[in-house]
Length: 227
Image (cartoon, rainbow, N blue to C red):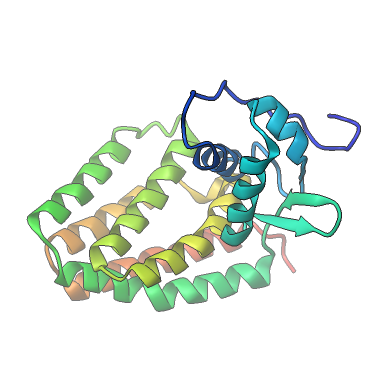
């Protein structure tokens, strides 16, 4: 930890002639999503730039994008820090939003299903099932993000997809901080969802997604101390 109170980050060397802003953004976002940079941690622009051997400009650009994602806050005269974990009320509100968006989206994806879309869903599910030992929580959590994003993509509404992506970032961080919310039950729910969407079963897809989101909310809320 340096004299500013910011933790020192460790990055691999940057590849030459790459889109530096995109690369810095991707690496910082991954560190935040995996809680390698913990919630509420200050990010020192100059320190990051030195470690990446880049100017501060792409770091600032990346942090501005992360602020738009809701993953960092800009502090007046102090730079940036990662956002805090969400509280119980905010989690309830986000799940309310998910229940408004996702069951309808799953039904729409089923209605628009193609053989290629079904193959992509099954491939994602097969890859996740191969990691049944859950040796890496991050891998399972990343599968969850990819699957839900794929359903939104197949539904064909990019505006809703992007809105969901921004809110799901917070839930992803929350899950990484409270490790009890994933397990075989998650993959079982995903399999039922994939089966229904792939088959073009609109009512079944809507029901499977609703049941999955409601079960997820119960698991996440159970991590909060009794109020």
